[in-house]
Image 1 (tube, rainbow over the protein chains, first blue to last red):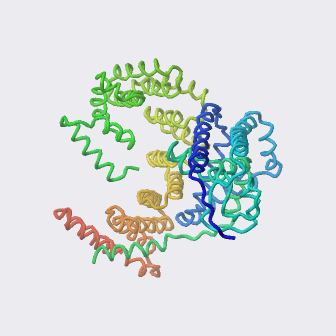
Image 2 (image 1 turned 60 degrees about the horizontal axis):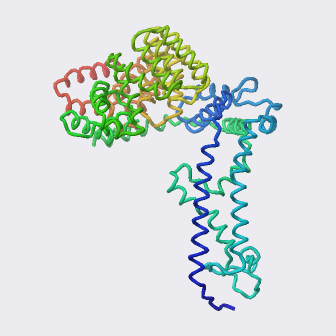
Image 3 (image 1 turned 120 degrees about the vertical axis):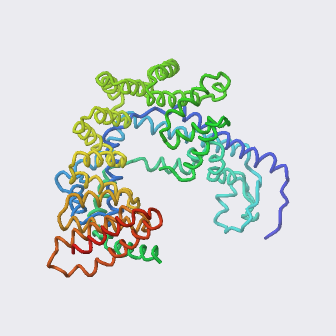
Length: 246
Length: 302
């Protein structure tokens, strides 16, 4: 049944706007707290060196056509040599990175802090929303949805005949959760524009495993065929000169 | 890299400030951003801002950056007292800071007290062994003392860790060229071309080093790189055009009697010669006879 419910404007004033404001404020608060709690991690020599090796290997892959074949080959062996090539990681070491992550107390503390700073505000806000703002229709989504979304979006509303486009405030909360990144980038400056989706992704992908990226680069370089671009450049030079002299 | 528009803006600001118009602070910020080396102007205008209480308080937190900038400029102009005063103010505000320690080390360097500067840098490196700027200061010191082999050693050690730093590769290449170690210089230029393949000066420098090393294969490769410079600069680089001609002459001399490749290459050479002639006619017509006689000699020598 597609009847139009008329929603009280008081809902807008007292539910939607305060919820958004609260989430923005919590985000800003979280930013400042994380700045205070951030421990200065001294860069590790090995990590820096590996990062630079990867950059150099990537440059080699990208611009391999610009250097003579002999130089390319010597660099290729330098990087992928089985004994002491830069990118070659002996089998035993590659599994250690994860274990190292957990055993190193600094890293574990950092991760815990990051997780906490994310979980606690989220839990609190969600509980607050559920407590105060449940049991009524908060907004109408402008596009029609299937019945499957009913369970997710209409949580406090126990009428099964209401159109699925009418959602409860919990879905407004989720909308804000995923969408406030643009606002944060305006307020906090470009680099701090992290909203919760990105933090969640950061949380899940915490294993910065250098050995994996090293072997990925190594495979990349192994595959490459050297295609010397310089002879074509001679032709292009001729054309350029011809155009210049016309 | 300095963009052309920003460089023009800096020139304009410079003339404006020199002639008494305002905008000194903007000029100083731009100089700092573009890393231009205008030490006497920076010193003059920076000091005028710093000595004026009102202007200084208007800067707020940027005041300390200005102190640092003026200290560098003073060292460049050998005004050690000014530099010392600036450093004293800075170290009162930020005691024990590595950045200030660096500036102190540079003051010792500019006075010529190499041993003490070295001690200061060694101490700073103990605290933060991965500070790139301190490593580079050590290289600069070795170079200033004329000890090029020590500079090479330091640079190599630096590059073992920070191998993606293309400025360091460029510096190493230039030192190798001055030491006449051309093969190593060629390696460095290859690194530069790998990291920035569309920058013409690296192609040009690589071609020159190859041409200097000599040998048929190197000459042919050099000619290709001169050609790529010509292509990248649209034919406007005179040195590359000359390079093309000289390479062709040298190759022809080496391959006398084997004339299978001559016909393909000569197109590029004649075009380059023509472009050179036109360039000279436009820009330096009184040197044109020199060019003509050189080109005639090249054709005759084949």
